[in-house]
Image 1 (cartoon, helix red, strand yellow):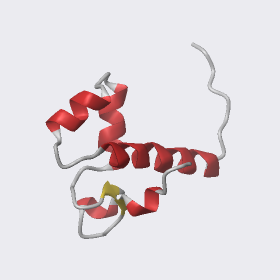
Image 2 (cartoon, helix red, strand yellow):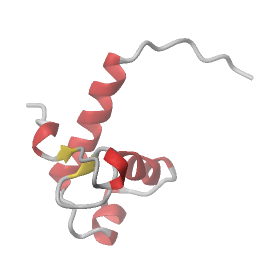
Image 3 (tube, rainbow, N blue to C red):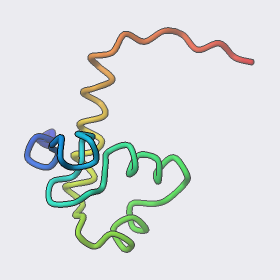
Amino acid sequence: MAINWKKHINSNPDILVGKPVVKGTRLSVDFLLGLLAKGWSEKQILKNYPSLKTDSLQAVFAFAAECMREEALFSISKR
């Protein structure tokens, strides 16, 4: 069963200028995805940010996946 990201992610103009964040934190979705892109493991993220839970990280992925489904994607040229 897919996680309902809306229970874990929200956006408030008073927090990080409205960027989507994990509820109850100032950790934005793009920041957490950036850590993963840099090679951080889930274990490292949870250790360094103890306010996060596994469900919160799964919600970040679910949110990102839904955003990507709604975007028009174009082929990326190889250089």
